[in-house]
Length: 600
Image (cartoon, rainbow, N blue to C red; front, side, top):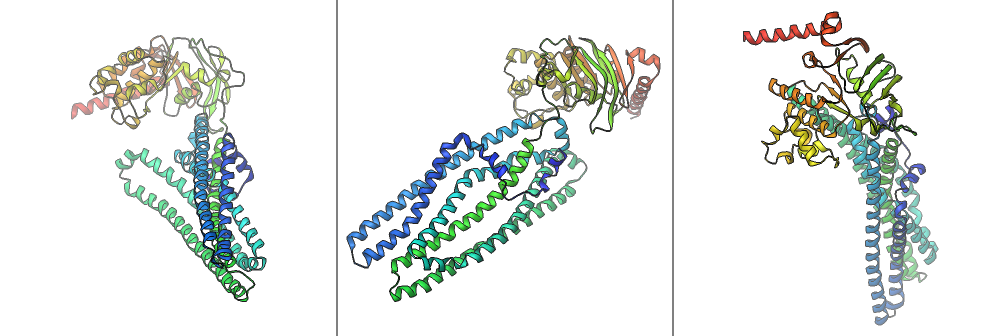
């Protein structure tokens, strides 16, 4: 996974057959349409080759002989060729664009689906902006290849070979004169290819950096503004954006040089034809119609060469994108549902940790040999200083992470044998930092679960004291709250998260700092909602504010990753251990704040 973070800096092959084979898999369901597009392209290429021959015959057989009737017929044939060529080209482009969009749709759906299977450890290590680049920019690069590259590259090559073949058949010596400039063109194309390839890789790298930077700073805009970091953020953005612009300028420069070089070489070929062929026409060894046909073939010969240069850019861009997309698709989760899972349908709510140890980086242990048992329906609080391992326990219970040592049992079943869906269906987690999606309030409560009826949803909203707020809104539960719930207060967001948990009716409930950062009145509403929420459920409450957990059945005290104390509020105070010290510190802090308010 660490490699994924730096993969934008990797350089790969301009063409990789292994990657191409994987890409072509997405075209396989539409193989008939791809074949149709290929046939249409070959027909279109053939029509392009026939045109100059028709003009040659018109000049040599009809114009020279003043045959108006024959000239009219061949003119109609030529117009018919143009009309048919237009129709064939339109059908070919439409077909391949449709196929390309279908293939990209399937690939993007597969990628997004795969992202949802990856564990949180992956997202901890990889910036969101880079992942977003994979789903958007890299997929778009593959779209260009699948819809405009795969078949048309073949068509351009066929057109080139066909032109060379026709010229060789019509006049071998004049064809050789025409192709004298090919070595120079080959060298120019090779230099252009190597330069553009390097530049394009830099462009992709800076696009990924720019996306990551923008995503991070837009998400953290409040912090940027609070601490007056606008100028620093702007300067850093300017640096990345400037480097991206310079790389684009460099690629434009290469194209601005290469295309005129091709046109100059085309003009040189044309001049050689006129000079050499014109002499043959004067001497009577070459017809004028053949000379005109050759001039048209030269014009058409260099057009696919320029197209191939563009296609090469698309090809190497797509190879770089394919490597990153497939690297992401090949990233396997640290863990997933076991092959032979044990169904956990009848959840009673018993939780047991047996000598559990866990480290995020496999060396710095956050939990050390932790053991405890929670009975069905029991309300237990986890307390301790910051970094003691409280939130880590909730992450392990939800199986966002996998513990390295010991056993975690749910109703006596090893958590590693239970399907992930069953764990998260029976376990609810309410965080302090509530994440809300843009859309209606009821959509944020239901989260797409149509099994939650409107009656159950309204009951959940009412039971957690959110109804008094929703009634004041113009559309009630249909009120649009905006991205991340920007129109709601912290307390309202927490009440909404309680309603969400209550609507899903989990047997095990985890509350992670869910009562902090609110005013006194809202805290009372939240406390009432919590009492309703924890009723009849196994509840694990993680809290820094010890005053909020006096009513729980048991308190577990964690210190530096170890379980040091266990008991009720009164029992732990009598021990005068770690919990007593934490309580005294908070009590002194509260008294200090109260004294400060009185003095003010």
